Length: 138
Length: 389
Ligand SMILES: [Zn+2]
Image (cartoon, rainbow over all chains, first blue to last red; front, side, top):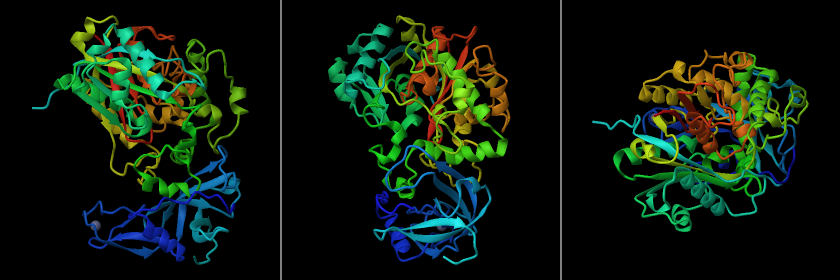
């Protein structure tokens, strides 16, 4: 994993809280305070009941690969190629996009079991990643 | 009562600049040249233009173009969002204006230094970020920065589920390259592509090679939309707009509609199909040729299914049977498309649709009564059906 030059996410009202939780070691899932529907990526309003109030729960981090892409070109500084990115169907019923590590590109497969962990770059930036499931906790 | 837009307006002028990898001029200069050439093609005086539409991504303001070209008083001007998804949206704005009287003669354009300036293939790694910065924030940190990275995520599932092979994708790429061999304006002109070359080429993602990806181009294309009645008095054979719509569906995101249950279809394109067929009073059987948005080869196969030319999962077979070729059921992107002519964000595909109705394509099929054109895939999009007067 490259440790410098990663593009940092632009932060605003609707996503900074999520990255703050990541920095504190938690993969958070946004939850509507009114109807309790979970949603991701985070947005200010619940599309089910139009409530603006929400809280969050920690994700279990367990899921399966719904799709993936393995990037060869173009290559940007701060990332190692081939770069594997996965869509993960979390057991909570949500889907999330993230990087996959500890896996040979040839071994990435649809429906493979994966688990989340919080990766820390050399500059201290923390970001959720997935790896093939081992049964370990986040 | 709603006003019908069917058959009210027509594409009456087509203008382009040269397509290159390094124009050496500003994007405004390209826009002006395309607009001037469009008006000359139509035989309309610049002073008669009273409406302008372009992309939110276009760097040339409407009034800057108007001032430079010497256009008239403007009563309608608009910019449409979502990159290549805007292509048909420009036409829809123009048709609404012409039908309601908001403007009489609307020029739409897209002009860009897409290779020598901000390279389109570099995605959000550069400056191509509009107002939805937070949306992109979910992908940027992971290095998911480029159109090909977003498109592969959905295409991968589709290719996997339906057993689409590199050979199937090569059929799309090579068919369009063969069209480009007859189009002197095309990037692929004079550059034949063999299956062996395709299979040996540089991989961009795990599923897509360089020939599955569109060009990056410096250039511009402009179109004049006016009433069908006025179009008859101008220089060219009108391409009458039978139906046109924009389309975005529930769960839609810009390039990253990853969170819908199904990842193997294009719901927004299915909505576009339903709407445009209903407006035109036509179905897939009535369409003689198409310009299906082709930034990446899998998108063509998926759209064959969205627009009802074949069943779900059978796009690969439809293509493998040669149906996208000149003598096939649905000659597609007869100019070479975004893959082999130029990437003018899809406006060059709309231009080819109008040429097919005029009968002036460099690969003109025998009989063309109706042409289907779509805009960007994986983004809020739209579809257009053109017909003969
Ligand atoms: Zn709710």
